[in-house]
Length: 328
Ligand SMILES: [Mn+2]
Image 1: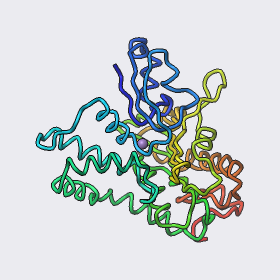
Image 2: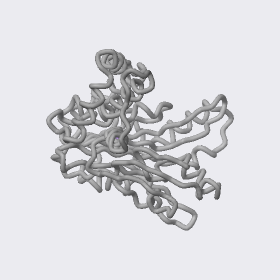
Image 3: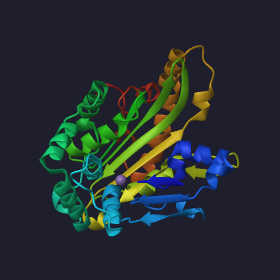
């Protein structure tokens, strides 16, 4: 059996969709999912061999898991190391899903799951969580954040849209989106980048990754926007969406969205070395992808193109004066 938590669109789980296409054995396994995202255009739920729980109004998958567990009559035993560890992990999971949510916006089901977990983990658990919260991100992430914040006056003051350029660490994309929301005046933040994965002397993947966050009082519906603008085209010219997300507007919550679009052309293009490939991505792939996404996003959300920034200079754009060059 394959258990899937916190996601159900196979197209946004690149490895799973690849495995499912390749292997009949994988396709035919029983699937069980627990999720709070919207059902996608193509979804695990469509499989005849899939069953699961989808609660779109829930704020956290870990909170759903705790309620399911307790309704089955199972309790976490605080005196056993196993029960303690599960409870600490579950509280960390809920906190992660609540990033950006106002404290007053917690649903009763979230509150009761948190209260239960707090009673299990006690002071020792809170101390561990405090240490986890204090873990710092890599310095490269802060450098990118610095670049993103140094342009603060150039963004539209409601919707910040930023392309980070070519990066080798996908984690910085949601990090910068979260920090822009936390620091700036924005109701929506959309951050994207061209991410490559390097294993020794080979580039094994090149993707456009994106992350979006929004507060409840915005006209931008991120899950819809992401599923429309982030897609691949298959052999028959059909669009297959690679983006999606969730919104919990009912609870005064925010919405979140993510996308990962493989760029096979750039991955497969032969170069003499990995450094040459990265150079090619920076000089050609990023400007092309940035301009394409800038056009798509600006026409979809009604922003002027010059309000969509690239953290690195995009030469074609500064030449025609559209205002994305450095120093403006
Ligand atoms: Mn979640």
